[in-house]
Image (tube, rainbow, N blue to C red; front, side, top):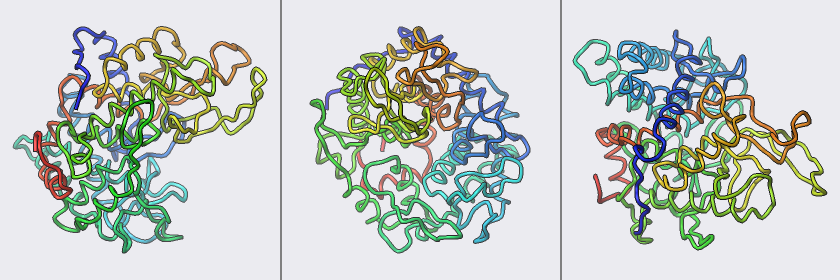
Length: 436
């Protein structure tokens, strides 16, 4: 497998990257309820908490300690607040619980911690949450009462998740469940961000997934050749990033990737190059797209509307999973998603980050990059600036912090390599080689 050379931060504007990472971390300092550790989904007033945002906070606090952005004592206090809340929060089939069967609702009220609206009990977001807890347990390893409690609670919360229940009698994991309608009709099938979910489910010593669950998921992959790159296809960038935040897939292979002479890290590198090539070709002729202007993923958008621009009828979207090259695409790119691909392809990511910062200052907000922007959706006050999301999202800023840290120090990767549940899950999935 051919790989691109790994550029070091020392020769690639590391001070600017450090500042981006630091400003992203501020989100978790400022948008968290200290009483229960819950983190706001986005910077909009009265936003509920996203359990995935809590996941990123729990993994980011150790980075903050290492970088001297937060004291170890403060990080412990924040981590314990979250772990105690989830351990003591109500579980059950009622409509206003926090979770059920060890899984949690996608969105929670920031104050009460109860289910927000009619959202689903989310299996994948619970997976990220448990991964954040396990990362905290690996980092806070000192022989103190508080750090011992972190390890005890994280372990108990992970062991409580009933992965067999989440399959609802099938081989693959369901997307989720609601008390009103039962299990959702969708399953984690097709290449997606669920690799971490399956690894955690396989690694559980209490309610583990059956070994055939992973094989059933892998059997739904699509292997494609696009722009000369052969890879396991997934359109949005986040699909190729989220599980990689926690698991170092370099040089470890399962049966599928061994057969294709690839690993999942290399697969993500190729997917990153496909995104850039799509923007260079720009088949839909969106404004801005090019060599240093790309990054389609799940992101905020201008809204569900249609506009005629330069004689072309354009359809625009709100929050959807945009992807390349098959769409959906409305001209909206997400700079944070480019940063999260830094470990895979720094040689094309770094120039793009600098281009966004230097040419489009409107996309830099209080916390690192804003979610997304669109130059084709013209701004009446300033036609050249287009539309920019007014919000920051925790699930965007967490990957910035953690993937940059993995790029420069392998920090979270090394923590998770020491987690026996992750190692056991990878081995049960058939992974061998490399650090395993």
